[in-house]
Image (cartoon, rainbow, N blue to C red; front, side, top):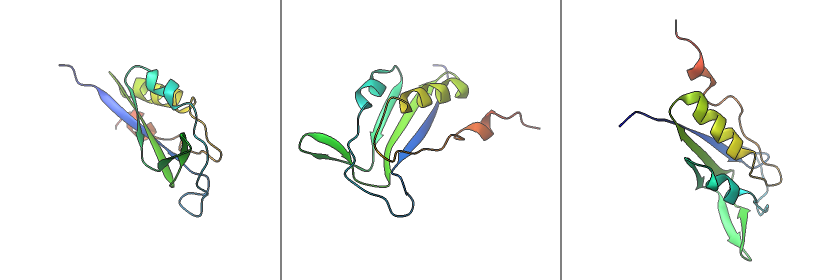
Length: 103
């Protein structure tokens, strides 16, 4: 079996790691999960009135798997763009150090 690489982008609540609000409606996860080799891990989520809402600082981990790191990163960030909640933020430098040539 060929080696594959994975990356995980954490979607956090606005204000995290400081003070943040809970109870923000989360949408778009279904679309992200339909992408091939993408898995969305729940961390700070809850269900209220049959709706998925934020319930923590680190809300979701969007993980993608591919044959190379750049492809995994591209896929993970494409999935992230499908997910929405008020105050959502994430780092855009994930994996970038690993893509640099080693000297």
